[in-house]
Length: 361
Image 1 (cartoon, helix red, strand yellow):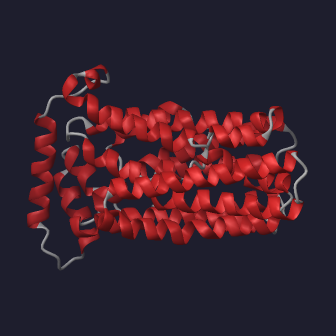
Image 2 (cartoon, rainbow, N blue to C red):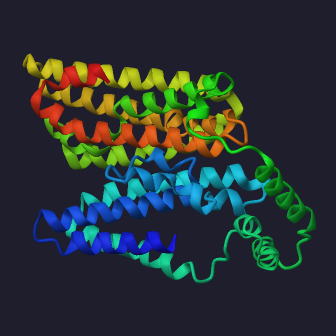
């Protein structure tokens, strides 16, 4: 996490002081390394929901295999693990929303300067945060493991039972056979892998990052005031993400995915219809409202289900000894899809009519 903070600080400095594309590209590459590291280290189940880094180097996403990963999952008590994971996602969405809103009020250089602050605070804060107890136990540093666990649970807490559970879990993991990527093609894993990979394909190739990154351009093309549209777009994600977190355990994963995918379908149809009408010289006012309705329907329903539920399902459908390898595979698929959609969206908007683009999504 400290290394990630340094990468991100270098990123913002490179962007802020840039005089041309080379410095901007350097900043984006540093951002890819930094966010790729920290998103998997802090909480891999939610990192890809934001799609916030289109240039993250793919091998960095596999860093979990090297560092033991998921800081939230490792430091949280069992009773709070789900809540902390949800809190992490809410903070991500909040950060994106705040950035969208602030970005409409200040220049991009000022926004880059503001971005340095949280990175610096994280770097300083890490000096007082203990190492993950589970990681310490995994590498055999028993005294440091107990000290770190007590720091997280409180000096008067009885940690003996939890410490024993952690040690037993680590021993169980070490005794299980290691699974390679080719082993995932075995019949016993095939259904789980197909579901996991399929969810990531549909999550990304439904066009989320194209709409997310180019919302301002879409509003402009549709004739809706881009600043107003962007602020509304940013603010709607937070309550819907919170709603999805509440409903996920109450109504089940599949019903939430049905609802979310249906809403995304309706949103894409509304957007496609909007640009089809614009091409045929329909009322500009109605077209603009239709575009706003389509984008809000899309992003709202995406936030409820398709944003987070696939990651929850991926964490639940694989056997314990397969999670690491399978998780790396589905994450690779997810980030490849994120890159592909982000890279092609602007070209497709320029080269073809937008109605065709949104109908394809």
